[in-house]
Image (cartoon, rainbow over all chains, first blue to last red; front, side, top):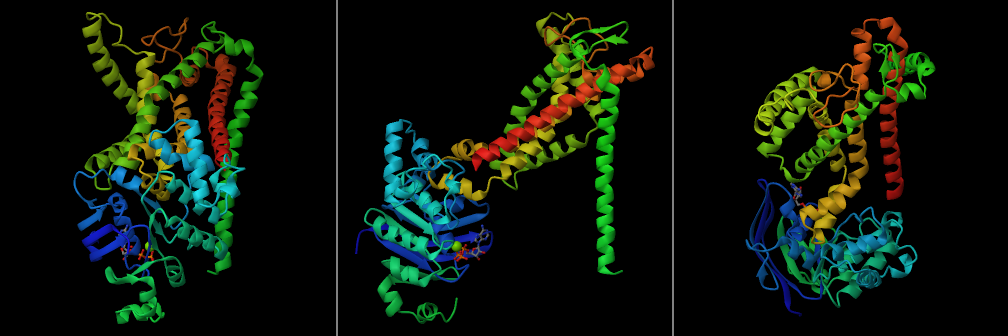
Amino acid sequence: MNNIKVKVKDLSLRYGTNLALKNITMDIPEKMVTAFIGPSGCGKSTFLRTLNRMNDLIDNVTIEGEVYIDNINIYDKNIDVVNLRKKVGMIFQKSNPFAKSVYENIAFGPRINGISQKSVLDEIVERSLKQAAIWDEVKDRLFNSALSLSGGQQQRICIARSLAVNPDIILMDEPASALDPISTAKIEELIHELKQDYTIIIVTHNMQQAARTSDLTALFYMGDLVEMNKTEIIFSNPAKKQTEDYISGRFG
Amino acid sequence: MNRNVKDTIFEGLTGISVLLIIFIIVSILAITIVGGWPNLNWTFLSEFPKDGMTKGGIFPAIVGTAVMTIIMAIAAVPFGVITAIYLAEYASEKSVIAKIIRFAVKTLAVVPSIIFGLFGLGFFIGFIGKNMDGLLNGGELRWGQPNILWASLTMALLTLPVVIVSVEEAIRTIPREMREASLALGATKWQTIRKVVLPGSVSGILTGTILAVSRGAGEVAPILFTGAAYFLSNLPHSLSDQFMSLGYHIYIMSTQSSNVDATQPIQFATTLVLLLLTFSLNAVAVTLRYRIRKKAK
Ligand SMILES: Nc1ncnc2c1ncn2[C@@H]1O[C@H](COP(=O)(O)OP(=O)(O)OP(=O)(O)O)[C@@H](O)[C@H]1O
Ligand SMILES: [Mg+2]
């Protein structure tokens, strides 16, 4: 097993008084794919969003516990959330490219980091698009609006956009749930490529997708972490009855 | 009552209101065009009024309205946009300050415009202007009387709520996903506003402010006591000069003139000019919105 990249300790989260995450403790290894599965509303997205402190943006959220990334507690008072988010990229369920050109979408992150030299930006844009396996499809229309692309292409643009800021970790919240099977296959292939260099955490509703793409799988149920283990084990020989039931489609 | 009958009645009522609105618009346009068009010519647009304002043109009123509109926009738009950004992006739902601002905006929006005029008279002229004279001019009267600056600022107060509301609405049309995308890339809140929210809502912001400003351009009541003049033989040279305005010109010619009948052609033509001015501002707003939408596609 690789080094631990993210270490979560006794993390609880409330939306107002509603307890959405209950004492979650888990270790997430570096440069592997970890999948979160579980029925709708069990807290997968909520948990994912605690890892880049996206829940900070929601009023009324209270968080207890600790999340260490590279041994630094990201909920510490003197953590710069902006820097944290540069290190922990996020891909959303609904692809959300800006209403700008493909090029400007990718250059957005580098630009806010103060990079303005055209040759450097060109190079980052090309490299990121290649990494996200979409360069060939868009290289002739870099200056067209990203919104003119197909859903699957838009999602890969979003992946390229987040790669352009050089994150260590990429969080993906059901990145393929709105896509057709071919686009989904492309995203899965891409996840496989990216794990050489990045730690990937993916939320998915699709059990086959978790089985195909991930090294580890964690099952959530009503705010609890039920079980987490190597994906083969979760899918062949889970320790908990609840996991077995969920995997075999008996609930959720 | 049977469903179909209800539907028919409702459709009938809708149809009647649509017809009524169209009828009103067409009548206003027809009356002003028929009455005003024959008198509209270059001399009318480029000359000062003559013969106790029964002849001549409305040049100073056009310039006055334009200058007032510009000063008003310079004062109201930045202030309104900043307030709207604060309300839409920074204030939390529960923020007391935001609640106070919203309450103030709503209240301002329903205050009759004549009250703004009285406020301008008391506040800008009676208070600020008088004190400026005391401090800057050794008590000599310069700012403590009606002028184009005070009139424009009074007008700015009147349009401010409209600007704030329409800009806030425009900003709120940017979906949360866009802000999250930007923040997740490590953008600060301000960077997100500047690079995602404002560019995305610029067409709404422009349209809203232009509409608000063009609405103000024709108002009379707020400038009645704060800077508009009955007749001036010169254009305003400084902010402390009075000015003539199209709306006010129509008002005085139709009520105060010694010979109302003689001025009737001028009234119609002035009305036509004012309508053309506000319509063309609206046309600019519509075109801008269309262009920007097309570009975003
Ligand atoms: N912004 C919010 N405010 C209040 N409650 C929320 C908010 N977001 C989520 N919740 C609640 O927290 C719980 C967990 O939601 P979450 O979105 O994390 O579930 P999920 O596992 O991602 O579900 P899905 O598979 O449907 O995406 C749910 O009960 C949900 O209603
Ligand atoms: Mg979710």
